[in-house]
Amino acid sequence: MAKTPLHPMLQQAVQLSVAGRNAEAVLIVTQMAAQNHPQAMAMLAEMKWRGGLVPQDPPAARELYRRAAALGHKQSGEITTNLLANGVAGPRDWQGALARLRSEARGDARRKLALALIEKMALTDAGDPARLPPAETLSERPDVRRIERLFTAAECDYLRQLAEPDYMPSVVNDAMGREVRDPIRTSDGATIHWMIEDPAVHALNRRLAAASGTTYEQGEATLILRYRPGQEYKPHFDFVRSGHNQRFKTVLVYLNHDYKGGETAFPEIGLSVKGRKGDALLFTSALPDRTVDPLSKHAGMPVGGGVKYLCTKWIRETRWIA
Image 1: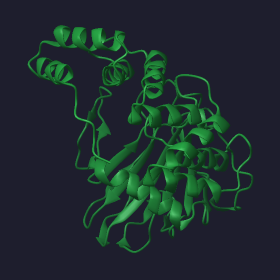
Image 2: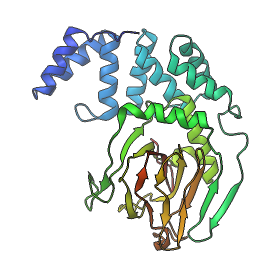
Image 3: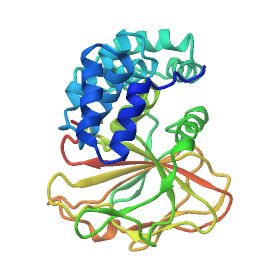
């Protein structure tokens, strides 16, 4: 389906913003949104979601997306479904999201695939996993566990498809908390953020939460990593410098295994793991007092051939999602 061209007035707003005339750009978008123009409502929703040009207000953004969807704006419809499924910035209604997804699947191949994946999952009425594979303990300290086939091959392939257009060079947090590129980490990453986290991905995220003994709301947005030959993540900790609401658990899911090298290594305890497609590796980064466990230092070893794909979920001590 061809993408609907942007309304000329909204094109002008974009050009004004590029030229630094943000107030004029926002005025055009706001006035058109007030007149119930679906494209303008979606554009204003994105502004409110991200913040910057206007004050950040995710609940207001979600409502604008809902209204634009009701007026036939396709992308807003999908975002509305996604946010209804995951409950970010508003109420969660899993069954309502599934009903919307079934309707969307009739005219969109990607949504049809998402629905097909969900229909093969064993889920509760709330979208949680009805059962989980058993976990194997690889280390007591740090707590490192492996779950074989936590994801199916089709689910792994789907995550790779979603990520493929959006890979960017990976970054780390510097001493000031800023995201910067660093030779310690040379992979590429694609974030499946909450607006594009469709119901199938949401169900997978709830599976990760259940497997780690945490809640979905404690998890950061899912990150898909791609390691080409020579790329690696040198020994590091998943802890962040901020002392508030630390990352204390990590779940990795191997999305393929047809590559050389690329093991996940814990040098302090002499453990090296290379999962097969769909296997998950779970480990804890914190001691009981919530300080960093020095034994949790780990690395993504250099890939020697082929391409490695990895799903990464960092989990916080308490609720992280807005």
